[in-house]
Length: 124
Image 1 (cartoon, rainbow, N blue to C red):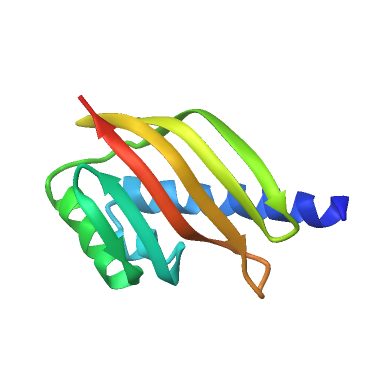
Image 2: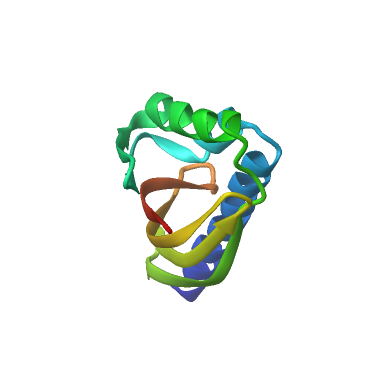
């Protein structure tokens, strides 16, 4: 049981770093690849995006608009069960800042974690 929770935590950390690296290198496809196929992303005040194609298009527009250098500020991770964990955090980048209220990362069959739910807000 405890070992499985460590696996979830490790997989989340690896996947989250992959997402940040993809965004910071301008790779929207790499960002979208960290989401489950039917993931739901709620980005306030921009709207709700369903599935990796809509999610990829959102990140591509931000990248095209010159957003980069995302950093998480004081992230907190709660392991929910043997297969999932929730990350919440403040965040900042070169042209925006905000809060992540819920990133639900779920362990996949191959041992990686992917985002099922992503809820965040840009703040002024």
